Image (cartoon, rainbow, N blue to C red; front, side, top):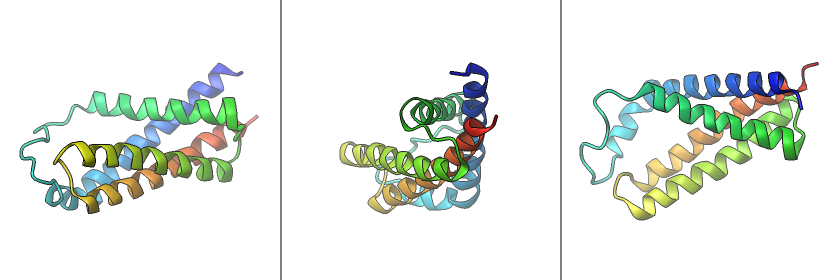
Length: 136
């Protein structure tokens, strides 16, 4: 197990997730998610804690990297895209459906859109991770 390669892949995946999160959640879909906030009011911070968001994305990237390296032996861009999509879909649905079932913070359309966005983000990050793991 090459720790340097694993660290690089996880870091690149974390940066990919962080940037794509900004593109989707702040750039493209911010108004949609604000309108689909459910009946809860004032749940968003005035200023997001960027360090916490980045650490969360990094943890997700470490999880993807670990799964690819340890169990799935994914070492290609294409394999990473596919594996990342499966992981993203399942994590996106698991978290969003659980939150939907236990809180009033979101609507069902927002749950489904967020699960789709998570799938896309994890798919692209998975591609980066898979590609980096396969480099010699």
